[in-house]
Length: 247
Image 1 (tube, rainbow, N blue to C red):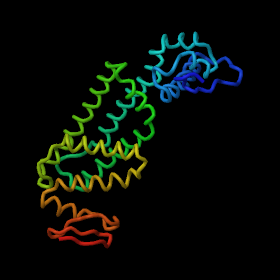
Image 2 (tube, helix red, strand yellow; image 1 turned 90 degrees about the vertical axis):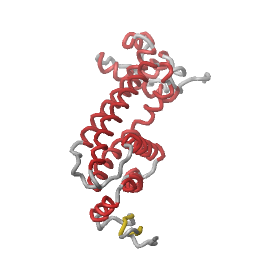
Image 3 (cartoon, rainbow, N blue to C red; image 1 turned 120 degrees about the vertical axis):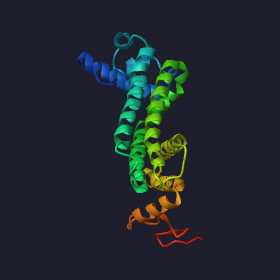
Image 4 (cartoon, helix red, strand yellow; image 1 turned 45 degrees about the vertical axis):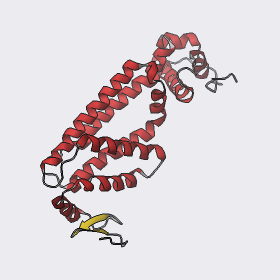
């Protein structure tokens, strides 16, 4: 097979006539797989047509060009993904306010990050396919950047409410959110147990931002059934799962 080929397996069954909408979706599905494997430059409309059991002419009739096909198969789903992530962030972070206890803040952020990590894990091939071609589509990269910045701004506005209580010392909510989002993304891509990873990460970082009063409140809120988690009592660090105690 020639260099740069997408290794697409051609359709072997006789082509049956499909309604235009179904045929378009079929071509999109084949094209998305091809672009995720070989990238934009390594994929041709001819190869996609063969794999879908149609002619290159029909592919171009539906999408106009290979660029149009890439936009429909990779770019538009990526933009939709970011919009959905923003909407989910609003829903999962909603309800937070100045009256939150540290444990309530922890649970709300945990829910959002777990959902983000699941989305990244599920859509990793699509995300990588787009990132690899960002230079080819600078205006789309700018759109995604704006959507991401919107998510960061809205979420940090919610996190900043925590600093109005005595439970937290002053901290930079943007730094806190970006570091947590990066950690959730890495957990998703490395195959770690995301829930355990986020539980450990957030308790290390979130409770590290607590004042003395906040640490006392966190210790009071700590579920008795949580194994081997770290709480503070009387200025010392204790591991509730029966581990070592350090002054």
